[in-house]
Length: 53
Image (cartoon, helix red, strand yellow):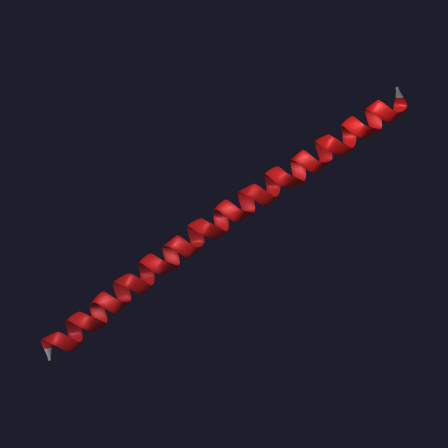
């Protein structure tokens, strides 16, 4: 019985770490997406200012 409880605790701990890791990855992807949007906007401004000259 003790082995089963220890095993269940280890499984729960592993699932918690997996969930935290998943959240961190989602946050990183969102930040990368925002960075890409910012770079795209800056490139458009640069292109517009270059064409305007």
